[in-house]
Image (cartoon, rainbow, N blue to C red; front, side):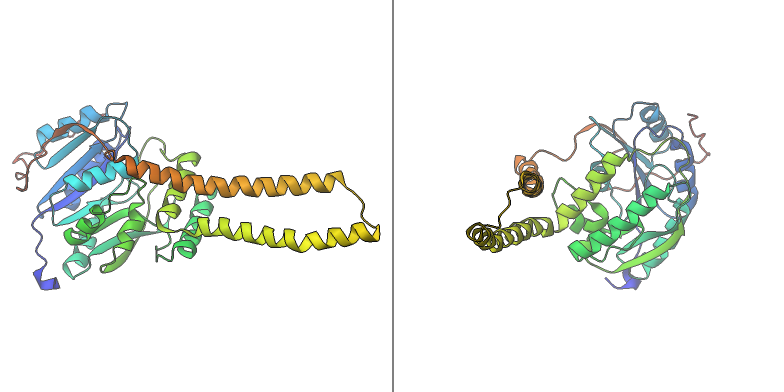
Length: 331
C-alpha cells in the first residue's frame, strides 16, 4: 500500500489491565486527549483483576461508546490479554500499550505520522527508563543481546510491546496461533516496514509491577524457545563434546593401569559423575521445555476465554464521543 493510500478509518488502542484501578481514569483521559481529532476506539482487556478495575472499566464503557471492555474468565497473562484485545480491535491501525502509563499515549500521534508515510510497524524504543532497578535494566540488556544472537531476529534493544501496527501486519501476527507468545518478537518476525520511535519511559503511575523475577524468567524462556532451536542444538553439542572427551580419556586410563601409575581417586570419580549427571539433567530439562510447549500446542485449548464484553460490536465504527465531557470514575 502506498503512503497516499493510507487513510485512517479507525484507530484501535488496546490496553491490558490487571489490578490497575489507579490508572484506569488517567489512561483513559490521556488516550482521549492524544487521539483528539481522529476516530478511535479504546479496547480494555481486564485480565481477571481482583480490585475495582473491572467496575471502573464498565463505568467508562457505559459513559463513552468508544470504550470497549473484555473481561477474561481468569488471569491468562499479559501476552494473552494483549492478544485478546488485538483480536477484537476493529481499526485499520492498532496500537498496543500497557495499562501502567509507563509508555506515554502522547506518542501515538507521532506513530500515526509514520504510519501515514508508509510504515507498517512503528515501535517505541526506550532511551531512558527511570524508576526501574539496576538489576532489571542489566538483565534486560543481557536478554536483548542473547535473544539477537540466538534467534537472528533484529529485535531493537529496549523496545517493548508499545507499538502501532497496520491492519495487514496485525493480521499476519494474529495468524500465528502459538500459545507461548512473545509479541514484540512476532511483530519483527512477520517483516513489513518497521520504524523505531524513541521516547523516555515514565515511572509506573501507581501500584506495583506484575512482572516478578519468576515471570520475567519465564517470559525470556518463552521468547527464546519460540524463535530458536539453538538450546536443543547446544544440548546435542554438549553430548558430543563429553563423549569425545570420554573416548580420548579411556586409552590414557588403560595405559596408566598397565604402567602401574594409576592412583584411584574417589573424589575425582565423584566430581566426574556429578558433572556428567548435571549436564545430562540440564540437557534433558531443555528438551523437556520444548516437549512441554509442544504438548501445550497439540491440546488445542483457546488462548483465553472471555467472560463478558462491553461495547463489543461488529465491523462498524464506534459512535462519536458524547457531546458533553464525561466525568472519569474515581478509583
